[in-house]
Image 1 (cartoon, rainbow, N blue to C red):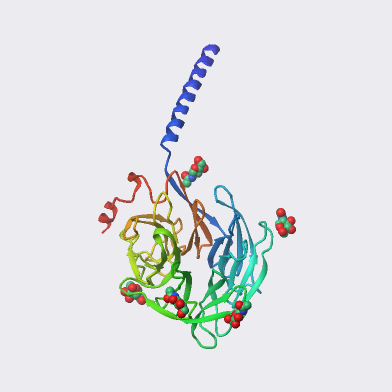
Image 2: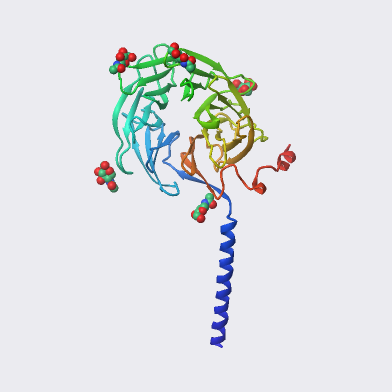
Length: 400
Ligand SMILES: *[C@@H]1O[C@H](CO)[C@@H](O)[C@H](O)[C@H]1NC(C)=O
Ligand SMILES: *[C@@H]1O[C@H](CO)[C@@H](O)[C@H](O)[C@H]1NC(C)=O
Ligand SMILES: *[C@@H]1O[C@H](CO)[C@@H](O)[C@H](O)[C@H]1NC(C)=O
Ligand SMILES: *[C@@H]1O[C@H](CO)[C@@H](O)[C@H](O)[C@H]1NC(C)=O
Ligand SMILES: *[C@@H]1O[C@H](CO)[C@@H](O)[C@H](O)[C@H]1NC(C)=O
């Protein structure tokens, strides 16, 4: 009997091994397509803001403004998953208002930060490892009457910052720009309330600035110093915030409209080298048409074609969902061909920024001090299998 049993068991093992082999060969030819969202909790703070990867490293720097802490986050070099973090106070004290974070190319490996409530910009060496304390290697004071550097960018040999707070001397708002290697070359451009993102149009080298409250975009010719305003038509939407420079078929400057306290309009726009503004609108009922689009990033890939990541936030209105939205375009970028919605795990998180890594996408949550990471397996973003595409509108029809 024991012999029989062992024989039966052996053949079972063989059968199992055989079928396991069959399953695995099937799975490699027909791999499971998936996407996954994971939240990584940061230290508790009421305002988790900007973040950027330190180029060529596995570190991401994230600002928490409410207590002026800089969080250094280490990523797994292969999966890009956050694996550890350490926080460092930045500025004189917890009221220094650490906000902007931007990588320098002029100083490779160094990062620009803004201390909004100290009215200064600093360039830091983030350090070679997780525990190394970031050291300040350069400080740029914002001259009067400028006040409150918020987002910071390096464009060519200049550093730019939108001064979000009203001037103590004039009550006006300004965009600041300085030559990185010439400390006497500092400029303030009067603008509308309040400048946020600052980007360069690649063909003309003109600078564009979103101004949120006054719902207008300023254009700056940094050579001549001339500025002009491109107001957002109110019937399209309001509150331009996020802006991104794109190359290739997407060429130009893209911006998103965050809406207002009554909700968003799912609108975003493009500025071509001719200066012409074009608007696009999400079509998916509720999810898209109420979207308050706070931030935007180029999502184009060779396999997927021209695309954008758009971040809808509950920051201005709880009528807008917290969602990451992938929008794909036709080859000539004349119309939207696909809208993929990824609802954030925590609603009313007031998602803030979207930053694509090599193979994953990171999203910061202003109000719930988390960093969310989206990862895809065996698919290109926007290229879902037909069965998984968001094409079934039955639920919306029933709801209405
Ligand atoms: C992707 O595949 C890897 C390895 O097979 C697995 O560990 C991971 O959980 C998968 N991710 C998703 C989003 O399914
Ligand atoms: C981290 O870097 C600092 C400064 O470069 C160095 O003193 C320290 O030994 C390093 N720590 C580890 C764990 O490598
Ligand atoms: C530095 O900037 C100042 C002010 O714009 C200018 O007068 C000066 O020529 C610049 N110096 C150099 C070395 O370019
Ligand atoms: C910016 O101003 C300079 C100097 O006046 C001018 O030569 C240039 O054509 C302007 N750039 C654009 C794109 O208009
Ligand atoms: C919000 O924006 C919409 C669309 O632009 C506009 O119709 C509405 O008047 C705005 N509401 C407020 C309170 O500003």
